[in-house]
Amino acid sequence: MGLPFLDSFSTAAGRGVWHADELGLADAQVVVTGHAALDAELPGGGWPVGAMTELLQATPEAHVWRLLLPALAQAVEARGGPVVLVGAPYEPCGTALAAQGLPVEALMCVRSDAPAARLWACEQALRCAEIAAVVAWLPQARVGELRRLQLAAAQHEVLLFVCRPESVALSASPARLRLRAERCPDDPAQ
Image (cartoon, rainbow, N blue to C red; front, side):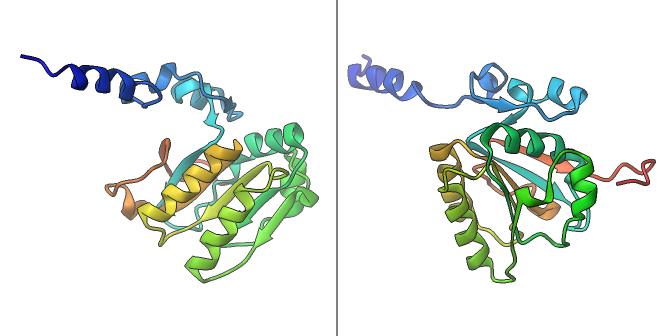
Protein backbone atom coordinates (compact mmCIF):
# COMPACT_ATOMS: atom_id res chain seq x y z
CA MET A 1 0.00 0.00 0.00
CA GLY A 2 1.49 3.31 -1.09
CA LEU A 3 1.41 6.49 0.90
CA PRO A 4 -0.48 9.10 -1.18
CA PHE A 5 1.03 12.06 0.67
CA LEU A 6 4.53 10.74 -0.05
CA ASP A 7 3.84 10.58 -3.82
CA SER A 8 2.52 14.15 -3.90
CA PHE A 9 5.38 15.29 -1.67
CA SER A 10 8.03 13.82 -3.95
CA THR A 11 6.39 15.42 -7.00
CA ALA A 12 6.22 18.81 -5.30
CA ALA A 13 9.74 18.45 -3.94
CA GLY A 14 11.02 17.66 -7.43
CA ARG A 15 10.11 21.11 -8.75
CA GLY A 16 12.93 23.58 -8.25
CA VAL A 17 15.27 20.85 -7.04
CA TRP A 18 18.51 20.46 -8.90
CA HIS A 19 19.33 16.98 -10.16
CA ALA A 20 22.94 16.23 -11.09
CA ASP A 21 22.01 14.44 -14.30
CA GLU A 22 20.13 17.54 -15.50
CA LEU A 23 22.86 20.12 -14.90
CA GLY A 24 23.87 20.32 -18.55
CA LEU A 25 20.25 20.82 -19.54
CA ALA A 26 19.64 23.60 -17.07
CA ASP A 27 18.17 26.81 -18.44
CA ALA A 28 20.12 28.92 -15.96
CA GLN A 29 21.77 32.08 -17.22
CA VAL A 30 25.47 31.78 -18.02
CA VAL A 31 28.31 34.04 -19.16
CA VAL A 32 30.58 32.48 -21.74
CA THR A 33 34.08 31.89 -20.43
CA GLY A 34 35.87 33.20 -23.50
CA HIS A 35 37.46 29.78 -23.95
CA ALA A 36 35.51 27.75 -26.52
CA ALA A 37 36.84 24.37 -25.36
CA LEU A 38 35.86 25.12 -21.76
CA ASP A 39 32.42 26.41 -22.75
CA ALA A 40 31.83 23.13 -24.60
CA GLU A 41 32.47 21.20 -21.38
CA LEU A 42 30.64 23.40 -18.88
CA PRO A 43 26.95 22.86 -18.10
CA GLY A 44 24.94 25.47 -19.95
CA GLY A 45 28.00 26.55 -21.97
CA GLY A 46 29.60 29.01 -19.55
CA TRP A 47 30.01 30.32 -16.00
CA PRO A 48 26.73 30.17 -14.06
CA VAL A 49 25.24 33.54 -13.11
CA GLY A 50 23.69 33.73 -9.68
CA ALA A 51 25.67 30.76 -8.46
CA MET A 52 29.00 30.06 -6.85
CA THR A 53 31.82 28.71 -8.96
CA GLU A 54 34.54 27.25 -6.81
CA LEU A 55 38.07 27.24 -8.19
CA LEU A 56 40.40 24.88 -6.38
CA GLN A 57 44.10 25.70 -6.63
CA ALA A 58 47.29 24.10 -5.32
CA THR A 59 48.54 27.53 -4.23
CA PRO A 60 46.94 30.98 -4.16
CA GLU A 61 49.80 32.17 -6.37
CA ALA A 62 48.31 30.15 -9.23
CA HIS A 63 46.43 33.11 -10.60
CA VAL A 64 43.15 32.48 -12.32
CA TRP A 65 43.16 35.72 -14.31
CA ARG A 66 43.69 34.08 -17.67
CA LEU A 67 40.77 31.77 -16.96
CA LEU A 68 38.34 34.42 -15.65
CA LEU A 69 39.34 37.60 -17.47
CA PRO A 70 37.13 37.28 -20.58
CA ALA A 71 34.00 36.63 -18.49
CA LEU A 72 34.81 39.38 -15.99
CA ALA A 73 35.29 41.91 -18.80
CA GLN A 74 31.99 40.80 -20.33
CA ALA A 75 30.19 41.10 -16.98
CA VAL A 76 31.52 44.64 -16.45
CA GLU A 77 30.40 45.64 -19.92
CA ALA A 78 26.94 44.09 -19.49
CA ARG A 79 26.19 45.31 -15.95
CA GLY A 80 28.28 48.46 -15.90
CA GLY A 81 29.50 47.81 -12.37
CA PRO A 82 32.84 46.82 -10.91
CA VAL A 83 34.42 43.47 -10.16
CA VAL A 84 35.11 43.12 -6.44
CA LEU A 85 38.27 41.24 -5.48
CA VAL A 86 38.24 40.03 -1.89
CA GLY A 87 41.50 38.87 -0.33
CA ALA A 88 43.47 38.62 -3.58
CA PRO A 89 46.91 37.16 -2.75
CA TYR A 90 48.61 39.71 -5.01
CA GLU A 91 47.66 43.09 -6.37
CA PRO A 92 46.53 42.66 -9.97
CA CYS A 93 48.51 44.29 -12.74
CA GLY A 94 46.09 46.93 -13.97
CA THR A 95 47.77 47.52 -17.32
CA ALA A 96 47.78 43.81 -18.16
CA LEU A 97 44.12 43.49 -17.22
CA ALA A 98 43.20 46.61 -19.20
CA ALA A 99 44.99 45.20 -22.24
CA GLN A 100 42.68 42.19 -22.01
CA GLY A 101 39.49 44.27 -21.75
CA LEU A 102 39.09 44.77 -17.99
CA PRO A 103 39.82 48.42 -17.15
CA VAL A 104 41.54 49.04 -13.82
CA GLU A 105 38.79 51.46 -12.77
CA ALA A 106 36.38 48.51 -12.93
CA LEU A 107 38.17 46.79 -10.03
CA MET A 108 37.47 47.19 -6.33
CA CYS A 109 39.95 45.48 -4.03
CA VAL A 110 39.10 44.49 -0.47
CA ARG A 111 42.14 43.56 1.58
CA SER A 112 41.86 41.71 4.86
CA ASP A 113 43.62 38.80 6.49
CA ALA A 114 40.65 38.12 8.78
CA PRO A 115 38.44 35.31 7.38
CA ALA A 116 35.29 36.81 8.93
CA ALA A 117 35.97 40.20 7.34
CA ARG A 118 36.48 38.59 3.92
CA LEU A 119 33.20 36.71 4.19
CA TRP A 120 31.37 39.86 5.30
CA ALA A 121 32.85 41.85 2.39
CA CYS A 122 31.79 39.15 -0.08
CA GLU A 123 28.26 39.03 1.22
CA GLN A 124 27.92 42.82 1.13
CA ALA A 125 29.31 43.00 -2.41
CA LEU A 126 26.92 40.29 -3.62
CA ARG A 127 23.99 42.27 -2.25
CA CYS A 128 24.97 45.42 -4.14
CA ALA A 129 23.00 45.78 -7.38
CA GLU A 130 25.83 47.59 -9.15
CA ILE A 131 28.42 44.80 -8.77
CA ALA A 132 29.25 42.86 -11.94
CA ALA A 133 31.12 40.00 -10.26
CA VAL A 134 32.90 38.95 -7.08
CA VAL A 135 36.17 37.01 -7.01
CA ALA A 136 37.17 35.95 -3.50
CA TRP A 137 40.03 34.00 -1.97
CA LEU A 138 38.49 32.21 1.01
CA PRO A 139 40.81 29.40 2.08
CA GLN A 140 39.22 28.90 5.52
CA ALA A 141 35.54 29.25 4.65
CA ARG A 142 33.19 26.63 6.06
CA VAL A 143 30.24 25.09 4.23
CA GLY A 144 27.62 27.17 6.06
CA GLU A 145 29.48 30.38 5.23
CA LEU A 146 29.78 29.38 1.59
CA ARG A 147 26.08 28.54 1.51
CA ARG A 148 25.25 32.10 2.60
CA LEU A 149 27.39 33.44 -0.24
CA GLN A 150 25.73 31.07 -2.71
CA LEU A 151 22.29 32.28 -1.62
CA ALA A 152 23.33 35.95 -1.93
CA ALA A 153 24.71 35.33 -5.43
CA ALA A 154 21.48 33.58 -6.45
CA GLN A 155 19.27 36.31 -5.02
CA HIS A 156 21.09 39.08 -6.89
CA GLU A 157 22.19 37.16 -10.02
CA VAL A 158 25.88 37.97 -9.67
CA LEU A 159 28.88 36.01 -10.94
CA LEU A 160 30.70 34.60 -7.91
CA PHE A 161 34.08 32.90 -8.05
CA VAL A 162 35.56 31.56 -4.83
CA CYS A 163 39.19 30.44 -4.85
CA ARG A 164 40.00 27.77 -2.30
CA PRO A 165 42.83 25.35 -1.68
CA GLU A 166 42.93 22.07 -3.55
CA SER A 167 42.93 20.29 -0.18
CA VAL A 168 39.15 20.91 0.22
CA ALA A 169 38.30 18.99 -2.95
CA LEU A 170 36.73 16.10 -1.03
CA SER A 171 34.73 18.31 1.36
CA ALA A 172 31.12 19.30 0.85
CA SER A 173 30.42 22.51 -1.02
CA PRO A 174 27.28 24.42 -2.04
CA ALA A 175 29.00 25.52 -5.28
CA ARG A 176 27.05 24.89 -8.46
CA LEU A 177 30.31 24.41 -10.31
CA ARG A 178 33.65 23.24 -8.93
CA LEU A 179 36.85 23.21 -10.98
CA ARG A 180 40.46 22.45 -10.21
CA ALA A 181 42.58 25.22 -11.75
CA GLU A 182 46.10 24.16 -12.66
CA ARG A 183 48.94 25.94 -14.34
CA CYS A 184 49.73 24.66 -17.82
CA PRO A 185 53.37 23.48 -17.65
CA ASP A 186 54.09 24.49 -21.26
CA ASP A 187 52.66 28.01 -20.96
CA PRO A 188 55.17 30.43 -19.36
CA ALA A 189 52.68 33.33 -19.43
CA GLN A 190 50.51 31.79 -16.72
